[in-house]
Length: 112
Length: 117
Image (cartoon, rainbow over all chains, first blue to last red; front, side, top):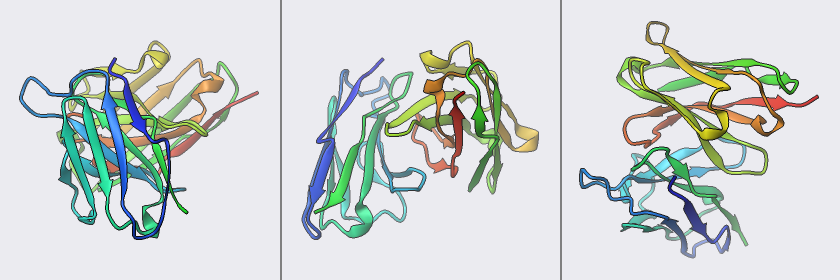
């Protein structure tokens, strides 16, 4: 199985500042069809997870453009610019390129 | 899109539970469906998924032989039969729509399963 790691696991941020979360996979996530199936989710306290970004960098409808995804192969990044209070919670990456799908351990974002 | 889980609760180790997920506002038969769980204090874990017609099924190793995923497209419903439950199965279980390559684009509110004596 592909192992996903994230860093940091805890991320205190100041409102209005930027935040960056790294996600790494134990194997390349480049699928034989040429696409890379690395997705990002956000789970606020007491809520269900919500998808933010799919296939590395495509933002979901309604997701602010403060959120951006990048990367390739085994190294990926979620960037949050101008952090707002509603951004708190846990962020997860997941790889869907190979079965079974595997999540990263999560990065907890909190406001300083 | 709406996904509503039910069937969670408190069960003793070794017991069984059947989770249900009612889907609405989309055509269930057009999608793979998945169960994901989150244990207390831990992260998300993919549990099982099922193909559009119910023939293809996959499970995380820790539940193989104990859990069975199924669906009834005519009833717009997804199920998870959980047998031989263990304390480590304690978690919130989410019903999730999978449009392709595990890009889970819709989640239910979750149902809590507690395995304890």
